[in-house]
Image 1 (cartoon, rainbow, N blue to C red):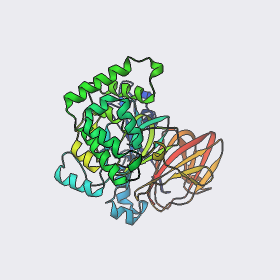
Image 2 (image 1 turned 120 degrees about the vertical axis):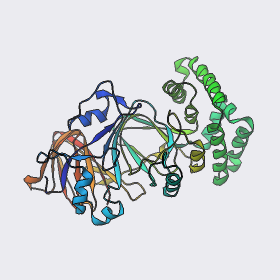
Image 3 (image 1 turned 45 degrees about the vertical axis):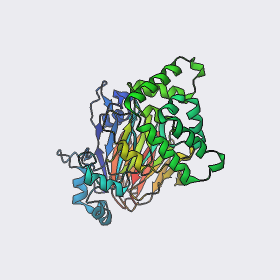
Image 4 (image 1 turned 90 degrees about the vertical axis):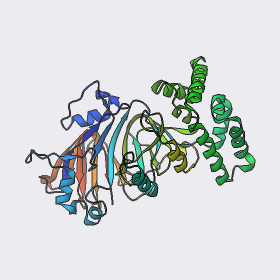
Length: 421
């Protein structure tokens, strides 16, 4: 087994209905590089890289056919994580690193903070599986769409007029109160505006199934009768979401209140606790705290906990562009995505033909995945015995304190590295 603090991993895929099919999925493409056989009819939604018990990564080691788990490697060598991180997270990594490949929209959801996560776990352990919070960050690998955070309030007010079906679902009294509250005279009263937004969102999410189904049918029929040239992006999104989740899903109406965010490769969004969101399409790199806590309320056949979702949201509002992160330079050819939490940060490295870059030792553990091109990786410059291949889909665990030298082959190389410092 490697003595340099670098270990190649085999990582498990998750098959959910919303995943891309077969080799259309980046998840399937990457997993096939470590031996997975791809079924062209199967949705490959997520690739999990880490120690989470639902899909733990294993160490690829030719000398040990039993393929020890990454967690057992760390348990036997706590210095790979650092003793402090090992003790704080009970031998697990602080983060879960993923690739997502999305064919149709995920649920309207939010993740609880630590206080709420602990309460939900205590009261409903069959639904909420752990007491942790789950902040997460998504970085686009391909053109990527998401709903993220509430729109500016003046946009929502316009939508109540443009889409009368939404106003009918909410009711005339709350609709008029919202428009009056968020008007020019009160636009700077944030607490009052957030209260009005909560009232509006609650009324929409708690509308009767019969009324939601009826009004959504009217809305989609009205939009579908228009010439395609008359439909804007949001009109088309409403029609698409209704096709993906037919039968009257209130989550379709959520698109009229939440920001529609489009990202190009390398752009990112950070989703802190109690932020409403839903990924819509594309492939992304995702990193999150090591938790599986999700509160859902639309665009899903799974359990919906509308009351908890409505009560937990922070009701921040702002533009779609304000949802995006701004990475910082890291070395000559890398960018650092550093969200305002302790559990993880992510480095994106892009090298052109035959370029190389040295990364100094990081205090804590990290996992990297090659998302394009090829090259070589060494644990210390000029030590050929620690030389590893970089190929698309290859995943490596890097122990704490290991300096890296990354070198691209002729076609260049791209990799993402999640770490806890």
